[in-house]
Length: 333
Image 1: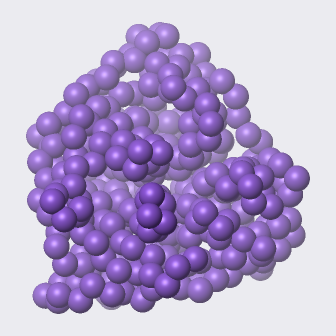
Image 2: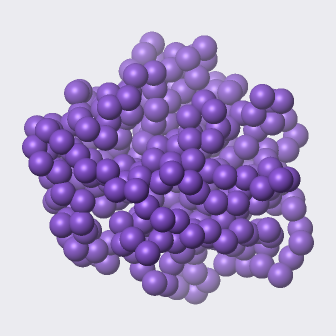
């Protein structure tokens, strides 16, 4: 989260205003341009253990569009729910071309997130939504700055405040104000974590310099740590059908700009007290079509094909872009 995005959020406060107990939903016009190659000036399709399927660069004349922190797809693999770090929900559907590649966004709507009193908070510090997970009947949101994990009804999250919350099992003083729990993902119900939500901190570190993490519920409820490889920070994650966790990480250095990678953490390693690490599936830099990549979701298509969709947060900056990229996991599970 940057100071620029904080200032921009204040400017947006008057754009979508909800009265107590209500929320205003704004339908948006979206312009999209397809991205056919991931490597700049390259026709390569394979990148590590992933194959590039396609992507889009999207924008809108409406200033609300941008700052996407996390995205989750519905079971139809078309409709999605996303959270923006300006304290908004974004819903819509992806469009595909005749060859099945991403081609655009449709039916996009944005609405303000409501606080526990059912009111539009309009205060960035209190509504800095960074992570999203969907569970039967619930949309679970991880907030930064005012650190918490709130549970909204699903359906009904756009018109309701949270109906509950998960306790974060770390002292608040140990969580960095702007480097909190950006990753939240729900594990497969039939796996060892039994459908529990799992959180990973962006850059709140334990005494050994590892990223704080926790299983918030279920038979293995407890804390663990994820090895941090400087300069990478965790921004989102999702579970494969076999229970392995894919962790999206990003870096920024003045010397070579932004970078991103995806790490795969084995299901059997995720347990209380563990320090986990994993194989890097892909590593990308400014020679690829990336930006400030913040959100990741995993789709399993009817034929068993595993797709990974990654989105960027443009921080409402003219120097950054809103990207949605799609990859195929190669080599099977």
